[in-house]
Length: 300
Ligand code: NDP
Image (spheres, rainbow, N blue to C red):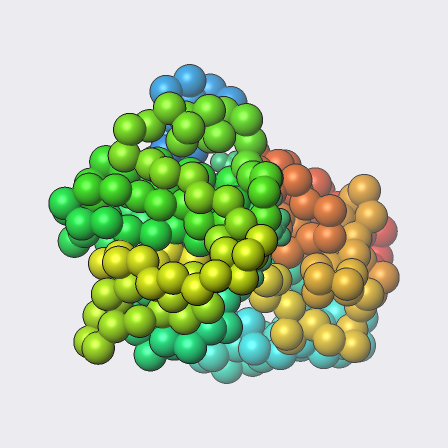
């Protein structure tokens, strides 16, 4: 059983099915995971010009399906040991599994400021490629300074009139390639030492109330949208008490992706120490599937 339909889960499913294991992937409602909305995955070997997530992920699904993996568009809700294996509670019922690979990924963190929940879907967004066409010619803000913030700011800069990257510190943490491209882009401003205090607007986002983190001065800046990319939280709520999680809630696993619990493996960004790259998540899925196969071959 594989919990997760992102690149780690689909690759684990592909490899597991090819090893002759009866393999079911619980994909959740949106097969493809976080990469599905990425316009161009640039560092995936073999694609020198990049490949869109919405092209890569369905092709891995097809490959896994042809290898014999089965799919259920439901989410894992609970997990408990059951004899030598596991009982998996999902949205559509219960399943038994001799081994489970957790590849449930991560979800975007929220800022937790007033206006954010009320205006979610009305200008507050975590998906640049989904919303960029609606923001043509308008100024938008991207909050954060990591890879997600800069990659998505570059996507938005093709449509919005201006993109302001608002970062609370005085450095960016994104890869050099994104920093150089953002700095060189005419439509992108990078503003340091800016903390977002509130998202303002009656029916849709109209402005952001920000604080200069050096002087504490408060200012309202007009934007038609706020894209929040301040890190990710792991989808591991269903795992509490079953195996060790690190301080961020990610699953602790060894070099073979095995966790402390027998027959339970972790792969992709849900794993503690994950590299946060598509190819690394696919590698995790491959290793976990091979380790699960060996675990079962050895009698569990
Ligand atoms: P990160 O955790 O890497 O970065 C989060 C950013 O948000 C940091 O700049 C952090 O700044 C800032 N931040 C955190 N909390 C707040 C807050 N409350 N208010 C304002 N800013 C805040 O998350 P990402 O989503 O960018 O990346 C997640 C993982 O995915 C990483 O491993 C990344 O490398 C990977 N990734 C890779 C991509 C690629 O290879 N193309 C693309 C996208 C993501 P501070 O320093 O102040 O805490």
